[in-house]
Figure 1: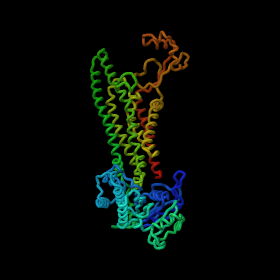
Figure 2: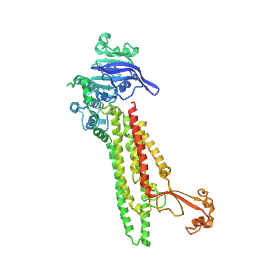
Figure 3: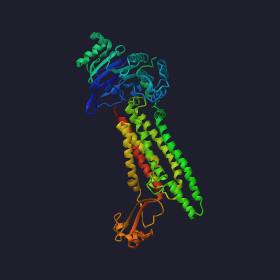
Figure 4: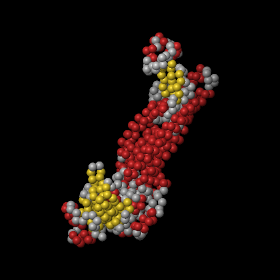
Length: 246
Length: 347
């Protein structure tokens, strides 16, 4: 099952195309790293997949064919936007209650356990948490929703190296324990290398390379970062469209 | 650890009911805690002042009504003193110092409340980026938008509607005294249903512009300007036309009180005089006369007729409901428009 599937997807903001003619399949059961330079259209692609933005042209479906933004799609996808936007003026407990009341599925024990283990103070206001704690809180809320797909947009951008490492470990653990698919975007690959099992390199909305990390490493005989770099430099598609290795 | 495959989870959710309105309402109230405190503080202060003044005024007025015989010089002086002290002098309403000034200032309350509560509702989410959280939860953005926009509207309308009772108490001596018609623009906006209706309108306008502009401060500014223009236009040009005014000839104010709309003078040949033209007609000798009736007597004896149009007090509720009604319709359209914009909005 493909967790995200787009066909000739395009999005124009006023005159400028943020994404154009993007056709790709993102398979489930992976931790997918969506990599590309700034302005490659990663965020635009993800916001359309989670139903925040409507495509200008083309279409995008999620979780095996559901239209993006449909009620069941909203239930099944937990999205953490860049900088993990949460209500800064609320204490952590109230932020959790807000999320619980806004969802049909909610696992309070899971949330309580995680926050307890992370040592995030429940009385503290969200705006007073450290960047790492805030990212972990956003991840906790996302996981408490028991999603089939977790979408993280640039989750590491605002974090220091230790927080990045902890965060990626949490994501890997959640993917394994909860059996969920993960798609995360980044313009830096180093932190993703250890946990990503599938790589998609995107430049200007075009898929430059897509494949399981294991196969890519075997066929290219180079590190993941080098593979990505090579494709970003070349800017020429090696695999495009639907010939993703399955 | 595993809860089953994703497809099994989806089958499960398909049978789940939508997120209950009570849950969304809790979220809305929690989000609006600051606004609730702010509105309570402002209305609480005003209410405290109105209660104190209402007690003082009603007591003072009780002394006026207790005075017998009412026609006695002593009693008339008492009534005049009451009016001067508490209603205020004949200077402009804002400078009179009495209830005229207070009720003039109260005209700012609906737009202040509406802009303060309505403008940040959606615009803050868009400014801070938290809409990307709110609109991707299982409740869906339409339900979220309806709860976020409608619940504060209901609360604000209910609170300001109840607040009108205080104005009635505060105004009672003046209304009973007959010197103030509840139809006067000064009183009309605070009594009946229109105080709540104007507050609702300001709120809906601020919420809509906030959604459209994505910015809180510009939404507040535009709300303020549009509100002031519309409120003045309504009192001067729209409200008088809710019903055809009564028209009567004569120099005495017809039927006691009511809301005077306009007056004009017809010449003996039936031609309407230009405003002010009458002063060039009447001889200076008559104009400077000590007798107050000399002016009108001269005009009557020379065949001129004064016409007056006015809205009688009996139409008060008809006018209240007309104005409340169209404000309610416009507010509902604005709130519906905001929901529609949210549904269509991209990120």
